[in-house]
Length: 426
Image (cartoon, rainbow, N blue to C red):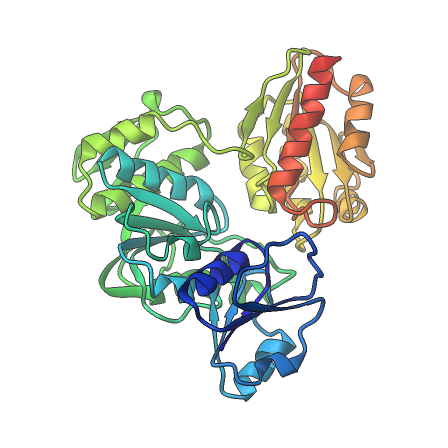
């Protein structure tokens, strides 16, 4: 019998496959979830994780939202029961080339870029794991030959088996310190992606980052495998991409393009396909997404910006002195004090919302622009007529998780866009 622990997106996908395969399983979640689907042949124990569920179990398949040191999992290990993540469980069964992408910032963008490049080269590819469909949904998938897995530390901590043909580490900056015991532990989990490479697999990392393994590198130095110049990307002296043809602003997006290009080129994708896909790339929803309104203000939805480093990147793409910044949500122990100088250069006001709002305002005390603590996005939009003028930018780049007020960052971003739509209607 298999225990599926956690009945969110990943757990439901695993449960659906176990039901289809006729494997005895029990699903457990601390939430009651009265509206969640129930799959035939499975047993459900919702509302708690009683240890008795482990009686007769051979494996626990864990969703990424569950801490790896949860007492239920510790009890399973004590009994000698295998504990694995949903990604690892599914990854053993999904056939095809698997590319893992991780990093503190940019992993969703690079995952989508790599998928688009592969599709441009007529290689059917799916984006999955932390974005797109859960990997379990691709068990038995014959429609795709390549799978691009966005991997957060929440998934990486539950993975031990070599499953990846290529692994990409984009960057390491402080994040999720509410979940991991230290930055060093978090950084070690990021580098752990390279431990998951199959023999002969390819590691990709930025120049100057200690990957811990031999890796192909992208960066500005002459020793990089893909050289990142201000105006172009070069691979073995061949021009891959001209920046004037690349549609996304910001040095961070230029670096993302370099990482995606090098990964694809290492997989023998033709340069022409890499170039065409990146020239056509228009970014992701909830990642510096321009939201049209027509009320004279410019709105950017960066709800996926859930750490301080992502806010720093977002502030490089907004007009100096003309930005109203929205921070806050559930704190991940971010160092918001590092935003003081960028805020003074770019912002005319800052709103701090949600559980973390007062603490963020405390870290920004004394900054030379108004910092206001309000309850939520509704309160921000109510205050905008007295705060922002025509031509200003309103930027939601919260630097925090969403779980104090929303189910996920997507719901937060959709709420922001709905409020912009309300401004348009008025």
